[in-house]
Every structure is written in C-alpha cells, then in structure tokens.
Length: 229
Image 1 (cartoon, rainbow, N blue to C red):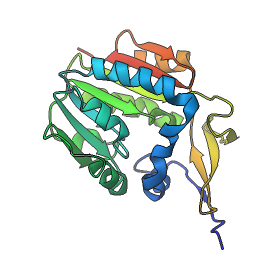
Image 2: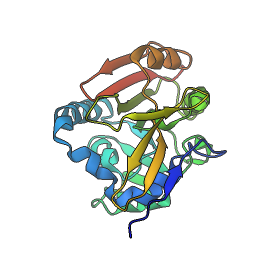
Image 3: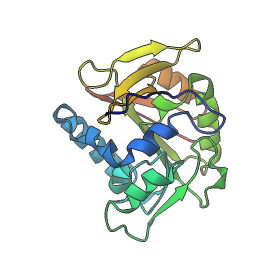
C-alpha cells in the first residue's frame, strides 16, 4: 500500500526546513527540468550564466543534484558547489565526469563560513524561495560577507505560473507560503515555497549590494548584483 504520510516542512534552527524533502527525492528532482513549457527559459538562463560566470571562481549555494553546477562549470575558472544534503551531492557527483576545477562540499546555505576558498562570484539557483521570509536578510548578508568585494551575485527562481508549478496551498502567520506536493509513493509534502515579486527581490538586494537588477522570464526570474566593495 502506498505511504500516505503527510510531511510538513517548517523552518528549523539550521537550514530552511526543506532538507528532508530534497534528501528524500534527490534522485528524481531533475524531472522539473524536463517540462516542455520551461525549455525556452532554461536555455535563456543557461546562456546568461555561461557568459556571466566565465573565468570566475564561483560559490554555488544549495547546488542540489548539480544540474546548474554543470552549466557553471562549462566556463567558470572554478566552482565550489555546496549543499546541506550529502544525498543530493552524491547525485551531483555521479552526474558526469567533472573537471578538477569543480568541487563539492557539504555546507548549510545559511552558514557558509565553513566553505574554503576565495570567491569572486556566487550563484543560488531555486533556493531563495525556500528561505523563510524572516531569514532572507540574514542569508543575503552572510553570503555577501563570504565573497570578495565587488563579486557578481546571481539568483534564479520560479515564478508562480498556473499549471507549471504546484499552487500555493496555505500561508503561515509570518507570510510564508507552502505547496502541497504529492509524490509517486503516495506521500504528501508541505514545502515552503515563496514567490517574491521583482520589487521585493530588488528591495531586499539593495540592502546588501549596489544597483540590483531583476528580470522576469515566462517561468523564472533572475536577479543579480555585486557584493559591497
């Protein structure tokens, strides 16, 4: 009989509260990148990242299964791909034959001080939406402090597009929104997933980096700025 367990993922002391979900579903997570309606956006994001990170020493936050790591590694001088879950990094390590310039490290995205290296760029793909609203400023401040002055910082995440993403199932007292994701084994996961508008993203980033920019595609948004000089 299928497991009908329902899991609720709230904020926890370390991480964002979604760690159990991604640990459990790491092998199947990349299915989200096969959806036909997203292919145009994916190509656009890949093209930009390949250009923007060329020759950079990149700190990747919440790298997951390494889908975006493979994109960054095509042109970057080096990539250190971090994730709180060893299970997702195991999938990432087995994804391909990686060049010596790509490394993987277990690290909490909200506590990056343990990651070794000097970085002049950072990328956080599809992680902002999983950070509780009360912790976003802390995450951004810690990330900026981990980078060399004037480093390029890029974020990518989902827009709330009907029919392409799970609908919002509920909102908590702090304003965070949650999706209910029904999985192939019959389990149901309440996953924290916020959908900030471009003005909110721009306002948040302006507190920590100069002249932030935000671009909305059909299914995704991209934001970028520089760490303080």
